[in-house]
Length: 96
Image (cartoon, rainbow, N blue to C red; front, side, top):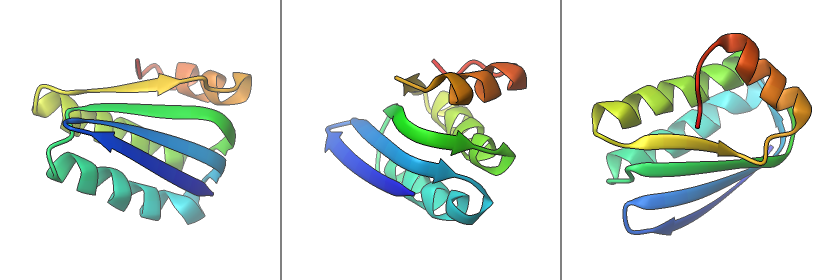
């Protein structure tokens, strides 16, 4: 998986490409946690090029969304493919 981060103040855009699965989720978790620890409050995750999302990857997104809410922030999933949107919808968790 490829991760690109653009940061401006307390906001960040994270663009994901490839497969977010068990193998890549640890690295993404560390990247996102570092952003939150460094003061990011609004995290936009662009997922147009994300071709696969499994439970481990979904867990990373849910975990960082919870951390952001605890500090008054938010996570927004943008441009997700139909398959990725379906996995998120089935989880019952709102990532907007």
